[in-house]
Amino acid sequence: MKALHFGAGNIGRGFIGPLLIESGFRLVFADVATDIIALLNERRSYRVVSAGGQVRVRDISGFDAVHLDSDTCLQEIADADLITTAVGVDHLPSVAGVLAKGLERRSPKGHSRPLTVMACENAIGATDRLRRMVIDRLSGGAADILENVHFANCLVDRIVPKTRWPGLGPADVVTEEYLEWVVEKHHWRIDVVPGGMTLVENLGPYLERKLYLLNGVHAAVAYLGYLNGYRTIGEALDDPAILHEAGEIQREISRGLSVKYPDIPEESFLAYAEQIIRRFRNPHIRDDVTRVGRDPLRKLKAGERLVAPLHLCLAAGFLPRHLLRGIAAAYTYDHAADPQAAELQQIIAQRGLTGALRKISGIDDEDLVEVIENEYKRIVTRRHGIGEVE
Image (cartoon, rainbow, N blue to C red; front, side):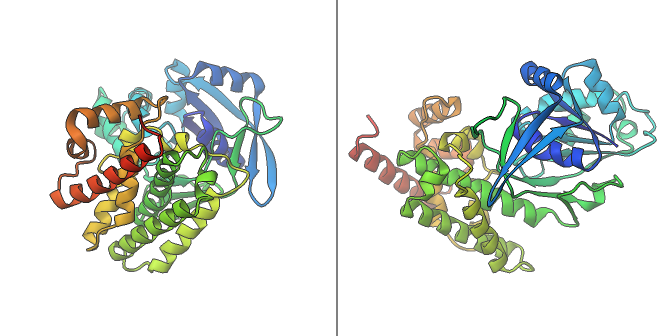
C-alpha cells in the first residue's frame, strides 16, 4: 500500500507518518521546504519521542521525501492508495493544485485501485474543502477523474509542539503519548486500517468536541496566558484564575454540545475536557503561548474554534460568558512577531472593536457585541493599570 503525505512538519513526522509506516504503508512525504526534504532523504530516519507517564523513543524509517512541486510528486499522487495532508488549512489551495495535476495522471475512467484522500487539519470539513478546491482546478471532466477517488473527512488529535529535547537532531520530534485519528467510515476504501485510527458513521460530534474543547480552549488559555505574561501553556494553567477560566469555558461548551447531540451525555464531554487539561499540563511538553495563539485572525473566524462554539451555546439557549471573555482576550493579542496579530490590531484601530468583530468574526448582534466590548475594555484597562500597554 502506498501513501503520500503532504506536510513534513511536526504533525506529519510525529503523528501521521509514523502511524502509516508502522501499519505497513510505503510512505512518501511531500513538502515545499527544500531543507527538510533534503534532510529526510539524507538521514533516511528520524526519532519520535513520546513523552507522558513514561518517555518512549522510536526510530522512524522506511520513507521517501519529495518536493511538492516536482514531477515525482505528481507520479506519487497517481500511484497512491492514500493521500493525507497536515499543512494548515490556509495552505490547502496549493496542495489542491498539485493534487489535481496528479489525479489527472490516473486513468480517466477510474484507477484499478481506489484512492482515499484526507485533509488532517484543525478545521471542520477540511477534506470537503479540499475536494471542492481540487474540482475547481481539474482541467478535464471531474466526474471521470474522481470516479474512484474518495474524500474522507477526519479528526486528528495529538499535541506535537516545537519542544527542545536533549540530544535530538533537526528532524526528530517530541510528542505527547495521546493520539486520536477518527475517520468517516463510508469514505474509507482501503483494506488496511492504520493503528490508532477509528472509523465512525457520524464524525460530527467528534470533530466539534475536539475543535471546541481542545483547540478552542487551547487558544483561550494562550491568549489569557499572554495577557498575564506567561511563556507556556503549562505556566498559564498553573495560575488558578486561568485554570478556572479554562474549566468554565469547557463546561459551557460541553453543555452546548450535549444539547446539539442529545444521545451523548454531557458527562462524556466533561470527561473528555478534563483529560485535555491534564494533557495541556504535561510537564514534558513545553508549548509556548505564542505558538498556540499565533494567527489570531484565522482563529477568530466565524466557523473557527472560538466563535463557532459561541454560536453553539447561543443555539442551546444560553450566553457563554467565560467563552466571551476568552474571545475578548483574543482580540487584545498583539505579539510583535505575529503578522496576523499586527493586522488584527490595525483593524481594531481603523474600525473599532465593533467593526473588527463584524469583519473578522461575523458578530454583529448588538447585545453580544456589548458583552464582548465590556470584557475587552476591562482587559485593556487592567493592562494599562499594570503597565503592560503603553
